[in-house]
Structures are given as C-alpha cells and as structure tokens.
Length: 207
Image (cartoon, rainbow, N blue to C red; front, side):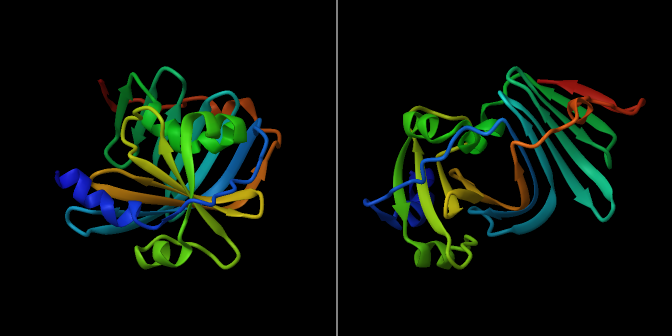
C-alpha cells in the first residue's frame, strides 16, 4: 500500500486529451544532462550532471561528471549494464538493462512509444508544484507502461514542439528527472565512444 500511496501525487495531475508529437526513430542521440533526484521516502534531493551517447539500436553510454573529471560511467547493451565508479575504483556488471533503457524509449520513435505505453497529457502547473522542471513553452506527457518495466512505474516526458527536453522516472521510492541540453540527433558518433576502456586494478563484481 505504501507504494501506491507514494505514487498518488504524481498520478493525479493527468488530463485525457494528450497528443504526443509524432516523432521518428533516432539513429543517434548525444546530449548534456542535469539529473534531479528526489527520494519519496526521505525527501533527500541531489543534482548531478553529465553526458549521454546513444547509437541505435541499443548502445548507450552515460558519463557523470564531477568538476572536470568523470566520476561514474554506465555502458548499456541489450544484454548487460557495466557500471564503473572511478572514485571507488569498482566495476559492476549486471546482466539486464531494462531499467536503464526504458526511459530513453522516445529514441525508438512515436510508434514504439504508443505500442509500449498508455499516453496522457500531464498538468504542467501541478507537475511544477511537485518539483518537476517544465520550462516555458514545454508540454508534459505521462507514459504508463503497458507491461512491467523494472525500476519504472510511470514516466513523464517534456517536449518543446516535437523535441524531447527531459524525462522523469517515477517508482515507489523516488522520482528522477533528467533534463537534456545541447542535444544532437542523428549525428555521427565515433565507435570508440562505446569502447569500455577500464583502468587496471579496479574491484569487479557480477550480478
């Protein structure tokens, strides 16, 4: 019951007249981001920033930046997520990637989103009240998975015209908004971007 109660404030700001922009699949995507994390259990908040690269069909790299240095990295493939923490000098390999890729589903295009999610328009003012960043001129939509997705109860996405500007991942314990900037779509990305160059001496673990 606690999980349902925590979700109610987010599920309440819904309208039923949504018209999600009809966008095409992206072959590549590169962007800076600012991540706003809020714990629904403790109220704790944090802000991080970094860079994302995506190459269709499903290669993704996340770099989290601390000052001028890369603090953490995630390399995502269809079969696994490789997490590298340079501060702790540790590497964790997890043999599934659904929760890391599902909130970038918009990269697959309008048709896939409509097949995978029930879409409704969100109430912009109430979203802002709950701490979601919605800039002037943007629209917000709620995407409810039609089948279970690990780590995701519902997504919210913001659009400026036909381009996505942020995604919010909500589950029973947190909501996590990733705001994109300087985004580039369908540009050339060097293959070595997705190469896992891991320094020696890091502690390794598999899950």
